[in-house]
Amino acid sequence: MTVTDDAAALAREAPEHNPFMAMLTRFDRAAELLGLDQGIYRILKAPEKELKVAIPVRMDDGSFEVYEGWRVQHNSTMGPCKGGIRYSPHVNIDEVRALAAWMTWKCAIVNVPFGGAKGGVRCDPRTLSIGELERVTRRFTSGIIDIIGPDRDVPAPDMYTNEQVMAWIMDTYSMHKGHTVTSVVTGKPWGLGGSQGRKEATGRGLLTMVREAADVKKLDLADATVVVQGAGNVGGTIAELLSEVGVKIVAISDIDGYLLNEGGLDAKKLVRHLERKGQLAEFKGGEYIDGQGLLEMECDILIPCATENQITSVNADKINCKIIVEGANGPTTARADDILDEKDIFVIPDILANAGGVVVSYFEWVQDRMGYFWERRDVNLRLAKVMRTAFRQVLKRTKTSKVNMRTAAYIEAVDRVANLQKMRGLYP
Ligand code: GLU
Image 1 (cartoon, rainbow, N blue to C red):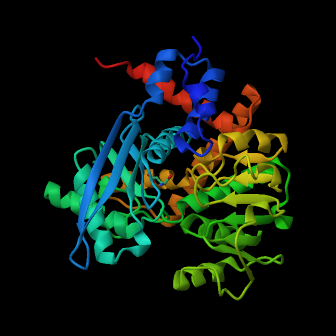
Image 2 (cartoon, protein in one colour; image 1 turned 120 degrees about the vertical axis):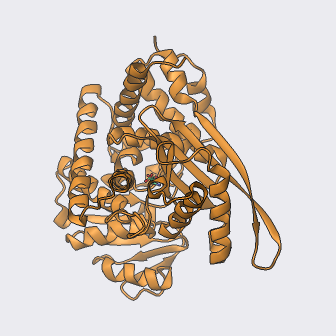
């Protein structure tokens, strides 16, 4: 039976910028091409569990603030749910739902035994003191404590959360249990159950993707130019790793503007500058341009590492590169997909490209449960191997199913989860 559900039509009509609809449009396309059973389709489409919590917090001035938070578990067919927690003033339930589903597909593509989940707290972490941030985190953790755990659902960092936030989550959970439980979150600091290489893992995974994609497109990386959108953990790391291997980064952006240097930026120095100053402006090794325009710059490889909905039906036809490697989740809308296809741009989709983070999260969870920690070299080698294998499997699908990398990645992921779902059967 093929898919007849009206969700596909709904997704096509929905606003382009709704991330859940963006996910659903791609999922529907894959389900259609796979001839996915209608029942399985319905199971995989519906998030398993959604929890919304109010987070009352005492602010430094003695007043109370109440934040909203969500944890969505999309699908646990492959194992405990897994996915980051983001703090953002704009986060909403549809975004968290989409991000949770993307985690399901992402874990399936790289074959880590996790389902997909995501969390979000609507707050602006830049305006919170460190004490306020800690209280938000601990209260959110206690709000979702019944549905998380090493065998249930394992959070990790995402936008505006970091190792410190993960340490607080681990500590809060452990206090409730009465003993230290490191494997309840990943992305923790080294020494508190964190893994070597986790912080750089998403960026390092992108490096493997860039190499593989360049190989397919017969692009010599020694002569290539790269533009990176976003100078956070992911953007900063990939810029640094690429310039370490001699690839020229001609521009990189932050929230206000971008830094340009046609001769190539010194990414190592730039990352040190960011660590000290927190913004690109004032960096001596390039020209800082206030405002937009970075995505439309001519280059060989564009790496969006910021947020959702950056390449849309409005600007897709102005994108001027050969390869896009998606470091962010959902940077390209479903309507932009077709435009990029017409322009023959080779897109390595988010659910494959940025999976390095969750791969090393899996390694961290394994190490925590073993109580035995690996060397950085071993982590990096294993990560590269997993990413290479996933890339090649998706590439193979592009040939057998005659589709682009994004659709092939969805087909591969949905097929895997659907087959496992069939094997598990339905309870009761
Ligand atoms: N937030 C990251 C992602 O979107 C990492 C998730 C994890 O490690 O669980 O892939």
